[in-house]
Image 1 (cartoon, rainbow, N blue to C red):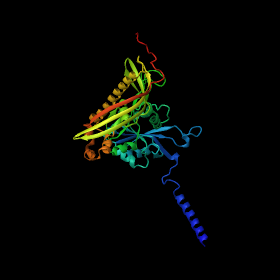
Image 2 (cartoon, one colour):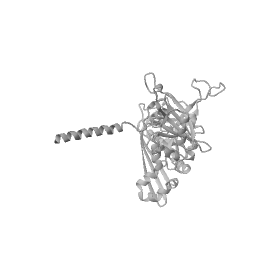
Image 3 (cartoon, rainbow, N blue to C red):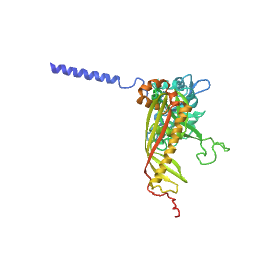
Image 4 (cartoon, rainbow, N blue to C red):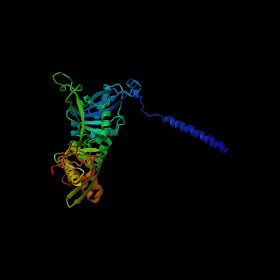
Length: 409
């Protein structure tokens, strides 16, 4: 009897599991890929009347868009729409495109300069609430008055703008660190932080000096259509969801040094009658904050390991005293760059995009209670000290510059 009861229970359990699995076999809103309009990148803009405009780059996921060997197709379509809100504008895409809009595969989310100067919080709110969007997409501001021109620009060796930006985010930081590549989730996290204001990437669309055939100026007397290229350099600084200003490439590099985002980059320093090129192999930034009476003090210390990869001066870089002098020149250059970037954020943006407030919170929790509600104001008046300590760990295979000439004795 006991065996029979156990067998019945086992059978009932199997049937119940099978039933549950069958009810969970797919998403309630499942749509076959061939019926989806998947956007790879999107621009949020606004016109003079306050209407929201979107420009969405859709990729073709249907079998007809596949390559000869069944690979994913590379065809894309840019559609624009307008509405009283970002969501309504996206819905009005259906007036033009014949498929169901899906944003779960979006690589990047652009904001026009116009919208960023007004306020992007309404759009961010929609993005976080919507089930057709993805918080892992990068976020960037397009500099200039015609953001849609970015869809006319070259995307290098990529097939779509979204894929181009994704690839840039993987490789460009390793080359220069003169830009930032952050996700929407990164932006939201910093927006809600008590001690840090958010930043976004920055791109600019500029005209190519020469056309693709290597001929004369684009758009010249020959009537050729202008060609554009995308420059990913600098960053967009925000304060409470509104664009506060831009950092150029050098200032963005300083931001990356402070936030410990610098990787394998090169910096050129004038020395003697030539230049010394340093390769940064390791960078560590430590920040110490304090409050004395009514003064806020921020101490920024950088320790850097580097190696010399090029030397055009007529000096013997193998000598310890020469290396020490080169290190001093490097330290002074980087100190000035970082100090300049911080000062600009203090006086022009009045926005702590570096996260010094988070360090104040961690290191001085009691004082932070008083500073929390007015931190950006306190940051703007803070005394910031920057120090750089570098060490050349290698100077290359040559002990002397290639064009070294010994002085007459």
